[in-house]
Length: 375
Image 1 (tube, rainbow, N blue to C red):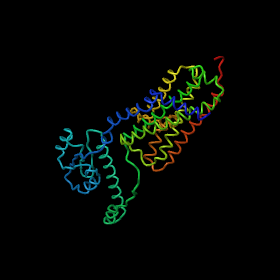
Image 2: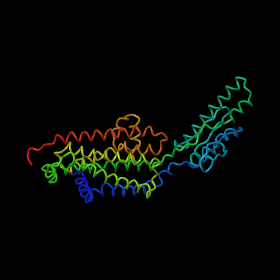
Image 3: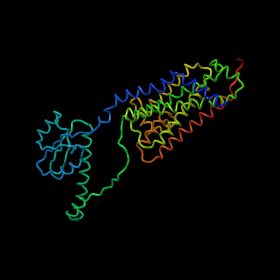
Image 4: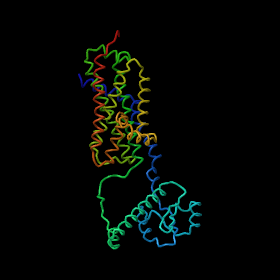
């Protein structure tokens, strides 16, 4: 009997083309727009070689040698020229240089007229250089030989070990958030199940309530049929993102499949709970409420260019991020891609699993208490 119910529920769901469009085709089309919009996003913030100047009548070769250690993929980060103070001020005003260092006896002053990344690097470099200079002065006053100090400064020790960590990708972040929203949109499948099971919502619900079949078995068959189709559908979306749109998800595919499975079951249980909790509201109203909740969660998860809000929440209101289902799913993809340790992912998955169990048990509670005055 169970497999009979399961089989026919599959057939019913496969014929629901609007449902399949909004939960599979639409996210794929939205991903195509993301690909077009974010194709050059990761290149936008790359630093290019910038011109700066040094104003000095002294020998600044040591300072320039240290400045040359700031490198980009194309070579030195800064192209240094020597100018007079008047020439440097003129070129700075005309934005021909990013800034200039003014050496005046024992002091070094950085002069800039903007506050961008390049100017911040110049300021930080000067701060580090002055700290090293102060240390050298202290060591000389302590009677340590200049040759020994010079040898210690030249001696470098590599504390960097090779790792498998990945560079940050802004476009990946948005695709992860889009996947979180796509999976949570599976709540519509759960709503459809409850709509077909409740006698005050549909003719199918009346027939089911009048039939001698066990109501829990009917609900379980509907849930598993929906889960099977929606899980496969989510994997199709994942495959299109990876193989067609070239979104890199890392190498932890076994955990990605687990994350999609638990996220799909969570979304279905969430939708079923919405249907059971608000049994007196029409189906269209439930979809509107559920879509509003999903979009709000997506907004707080950073999908709509609101990643700064997501980071602020993670720093100041972490519990809000833990109860945001879209954030839990998208954060799982993020952690599997960027983090070397899977411990944060395990904790994230436990929260998602906990909500799934809570939704399922709540559904059992509500469905056991359902009764009708008349049919």
